[in-house]
Length: 281
Ligand code: SF4
Image (cartoon, rainbow, N blue to C red):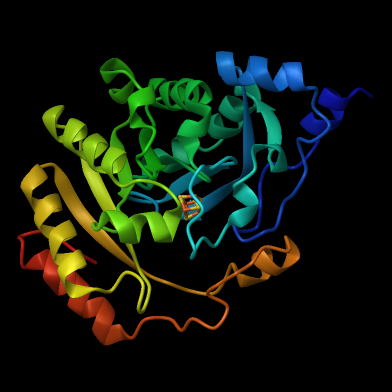
């Protein structure tokens, strides 16, 4: 059996996104990786999970891609940072997998969410898979850190019914310290989606002492409200479910002793978004 045949036999479905997966695509020849990225006929997936109720409207099937250029201090899936940790999956196999759920997703008013990692690291695959899902009549969502939005044309954005946009911080310095990357492209992508009237759900991870600065949250709230296309905001309390992954991967986890935010601080952040007229949960 050759490398590709062996990889095709690996199970796509994970029990949860917290399953640690590493080096699954390492054996794939470099030339195949380059072709895959250029054509989008193959992608690298950590896994598929089913039954999510937190990654878009209704019940969702979620495909978790590998590859991310951010290095968020609170990332709970650092095994998705490296593309070669994922299973190389042909577009055909991913589409066939998704087709199995089409009828059920319709009944449950759900859909398909492409998450990661950062899905737009594999922008050609992302576009092809989301287009295939939409062509099957499945509602499509892209969960993204927003910094690679430039890779998609306006016509390609039409294939995405909803963008789940992570805004991690407003302040440029804090954003850099938190993620290693600039916030500007994220905000530019949000503005572009607003100009195109494409719906956004903002996701904001609340970490005590890191992202709970009241003025910072207020700025994100004001910005989100000013866009006019933000349908809701999810305030996501930091948790430690990914701590074991940092340890297994021998990464320096700076938040090992970080506590989860109090209910009051989560409610306070939600209230800041609501004060700007947004729905926040
Ligand atoms: S953008 Fe998401 S996947 Fe990438 S490092 Fe941040 S939390 Fe992790």
